[in-house]
Image 1 (spheres, rainbow, N blue to C red):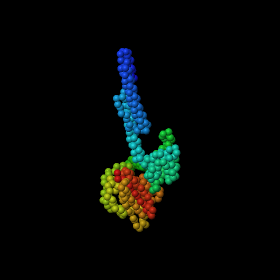
Image 2: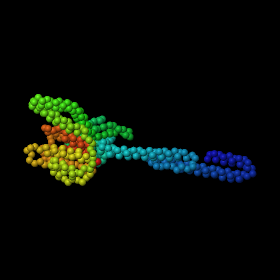
Image 3: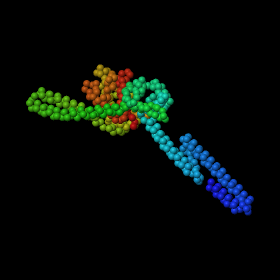
Image 4: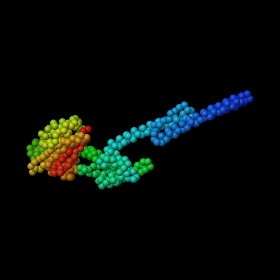
Length: 428
């Protein structure tokens, strides 16, 4: 625009020099028109610059308000074309980055809310500013705890639980739930700085099942070692015992024959004992198929009598039918053996309940003396038995089978006497 004005002035000066003598009015009129044109062009250019500046200002204000959908139309303007193009590229990049961050935030929110790890964040004012679904279920029975003061959340908690949560760093502690079962928890507590503010992050995870699995694996290792060592000793002892029996028969010595026969019987019993624990340490993974509960219960009822107190539900549960049969037989056998010789009436009942959301509950109960607290605590441990000739194998094997089905085996003493054993089998 400046170049155009300069050229106009030069042309006007040349024309004035050549024709000033002949046509002074024509020169004056031409000069006025040329200056008017130049002024009009300057005005139009100034207006366009104002419009461009306003567009750029509005665009920048939109970016400041986190509105990255704005873009500036690009015309053939020579001065602002590159600026507007760069602005649109920046807005497009910010829009894509925000969309990427939004997707990541949605994914993180989904992961946190579906995670079984209880996660919540407390700010410097002891207000809960974040809590996932697991935390809300644990502390407020599913209602939101956002905005609550941490002391208000702790009012209805077990004092031992609150004391454990107040510890710094990582810790492991055990608590009893409403059913009286001990649960192990791992707590990780750390400081987090967000938006220049200090916050406290709590990560609380139940490790009961992990500890149970580790416990079972440890028992299996012990059983394998003991079985190996005993087998190495039993084989030569059995061979020498057989040779001794042959020598006793040749010597016609009945007392030696009785001694070697007794040793052979004890070796046979020990061998069966080892085979039983070998079954626990080498239990196969369940071969799951739909279970026909009616047929299964009829077969078991021929071995151990029980009273079915509920209808057999028509639900589809995939499980290893042979393993589940073994579990039910062991528990029913224990229920029948729970009565003393003086007991006049044995009542063993079986019920099946269905939770449409989770799975199947089978409960076997008796009206015997129940279990002492110490026995309830150790009933599922291998080698533990209160029976004179018991091996401590039956219930340990039952727990291993149910764990392999991702279920749960639990015991409780009934209010009016007797023991109730509950087996939970999930749908999936």
